[in-house]
Image: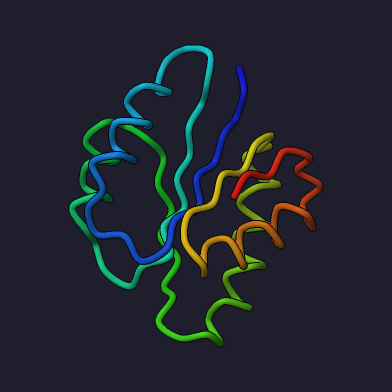
Length: 109
């Protein structure tokens, strides 16, 4: 089973991401999602409803991105993530750096 983690920033609702996650959510993959948002969103509720592990990191300013890098790194190491896929600027900045520091070889932006 491949551990895949999506890192997403600033999304409240996204049909295309929901479709991708539904498609990938089967026995060959174990999906995780890290959301860089301050509040609960429709997208987060969708993930919880579909039993996909979701971890929210509050991110309201550019300074919060530095803290997010270390939180994401800890999560990636703890869950033994093998592939990281990032969406949008803040998520790509924090997620790709954290994945590199955690030793994740497959990083997608």
